[in-house]
Image (cartoon, rainbow, N blue to C red; front, side, top):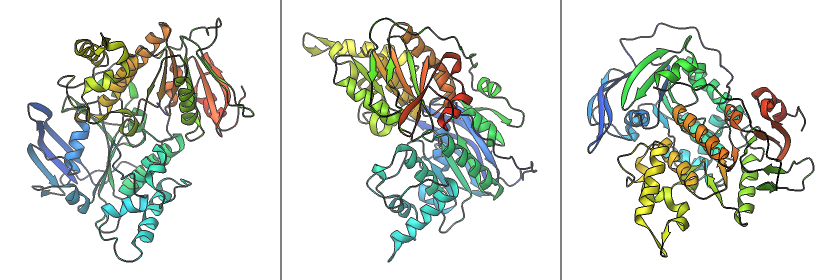
Length: 493
């Protein structure tokens, strides 16, 4: 988990409990026989930052989608600034000052940031609206992410996932009419690098001091403790605990979600010396180390975001895909590169294993379902059945299916492209154990992550700077201080 710079917490103030900004009583949501929310009571003060915590599928996003007007509640009462809410849509929420940054980005990829801003601000019209919209989104980007370098008139599809995340966040803070009252942020830092994450967290705290409430949904629990006033824990569609973050430890917060945080095992294996490495990728660039990885190794890519880690990972994957070693790839950007949206869980999970599922030249339905059932159970995918459409799952459960797809395949080398985005802490621990177990069986993993603490699961890491792998760390040398030092130009290979 990325260590964040803790923004200064303002002096605690007595909040007006009699007049909260948001008050929900007995709010529930059903999808046919499936109960997603069960009689939830939730309140938010006008200047409060609340962290919403829970495992994937706990109901966090459903509750916030109701507040944002995207989903209609099945039952319960909802008041905004003491006014009962009867009819409520996303447009109504926007007009009343409720904004939402969704976990699955909602930008139109074929439009520019300025044009995407125009979509939510209908009063940007007439001659010169593009220029005004561009200035509006740029001002917001500058306020939140100084030095972002994003062109407001560049097509969104050409931006990196981190840049798209920045635009989505900045758009939520743009204002042309009704003042902003509350911003809901669902896994907002999942695609951001270390510096951008710190910038955003500081902005959330500043906004609270200016009267803008925030609800932060994140599995990066250090962020909750750093900037939130309260942590609200959800389990299986219910709120099970509410705690002030003052004095709350990360391990205590993990336990409230129903998980016990396992102590991190810093024991590492000896590197495999015999035989040729499974991965041997060289660019020929000056001061660029060759990327080597042997059977049984977990090799990580580290460094400041945007310094070539993801590009190198993809280059290595593409070059190996043309060879004879079976490989698999787990995408972090599941929306555009991971899931097949019209398919079921079973179809998404088994698509990488079709060759091994052939029986007499045809794909065996029995073997496919057995494979899907086994791995969906191993990864604890929360769904009614393996025939459930994948887009009906939470983002974290979709990511579990992508993990299962790779691990169920015959791949000798598995490439992980920042794959823990939106995955809860319990699942992360289980995936870490599974990766280690698979490595001990001889599989090789090449892992890019923006979460520094995840790198301690690796046997070796390459720290990238300016598009090159400049430093190699191994074993006990893999720790946050050395990684950051190497990222900024210190250390040596």
